[in-house]
Amino acid sequence: MRRTVFDAEHRAFRATMRAFIDAEVVPSFGKWYDEGLVPREFYYRLGELGVLGMEVPVEHGGRGLDSFRYRAVLAEEIARAAVSFGGSSAHVSRCLPLINDLATPEQRRRWLPGFVTGETMFALAVAEPGTGTEPAGMRTTAPLSLDGGEYLLNGSKTYVTGGVHADRVIVCARTAPPSADDPTYGLSLLVVDSATPGYRVGRALDTLGRKVSDTAELTFTDVRVPVTDRLGEPHRGDDHLTAQLPRERLTIAVGAHAQARAALRFARRFTAERTAFTHSVASFQNTKFELAACRAEVDAIEAVVDRALAAHDRGDLTPADAASAKLFCTESAGRVIDRCLQLHGGVGYLADSPIARLYADHRIDRIVGGTSEVLRTVIAAEMGL
Image 1: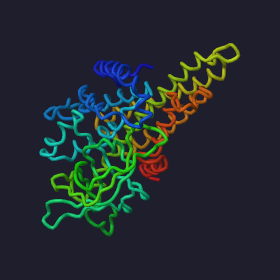
Image 2: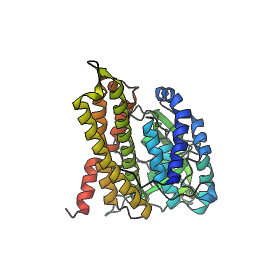
Image 3: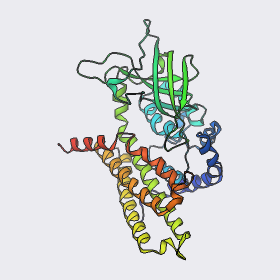
Image 4: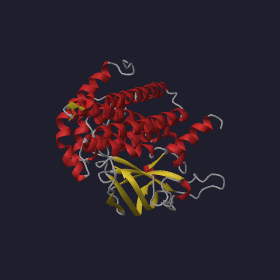
């Protein structure tokens, strides 16, 4: 079926990104993968291409686009090549929406020009060791000084995507005690300069997949954060993060579709080239049936993603809609990628094979942005259950 969600400008952007990935990312990705990190200079290159500033207002050096479809194109091209753009995913997908929605004009003037060029890379630090993202268990504190001029940040964060290279980190910290009827009250978002004394990058985490995502632990010891670097309303940080969940879940659904589509492409190519008993693996009925079933499932994922993209651009993607899209797309993509790996046989179990990278990279999608179990609860509540 012909997709109607993309127009000529999206197709031109796709061609540009495919050429860039093939020429400048694929040849180096094996080295990046082994090192577990993209080079810092790579972000400058993304800035030159305009990748980091697509949704940044024009007055701050961006393109001022309000459509999510360009991000969908980029996700598909990255998955097609089984590569990664490292921590830039958090920079753009997690941090920019918060800045666009919450930053003051003065903060935008300070932060966004460097955001666009890659000179100031952002990360988001919410989860903590032992408690995850549960607001009631958050131990990182940042009381306001007596003169009201700065916060004193102490604590630690984990699972910080882009944490090693980050120049600024949006940290969720407790700036006031929770209220009796609202355990989420008292959390604020502080934009912390990584050059501040007391800020320390801990160990880089060795994750199952997404090896170049630059995932790290961070610790803060008496880090002084100017009150002018608070993002959004004081004590309402959890509300600000919750408001971003529909977009975050759409991002994950889009990525899941891209990975499932890429896995099917890899399996078709591999089975056509691989022989068994003097015949191509693709010629056997079981292979044909498996690939056909995967194709049908990818088509269904695509339909859900395209409908969600259209709803987002219209401004009417509800939290339940986004939860449903993420749940369906990630669970379905997991099945597709697993079946496509099976068709690769032993080759699919090699860590450096594209299908193995997709398999490992995708697994986190059923956890981040709300686990599948949490999403079922969200959807059931919207159904009145």
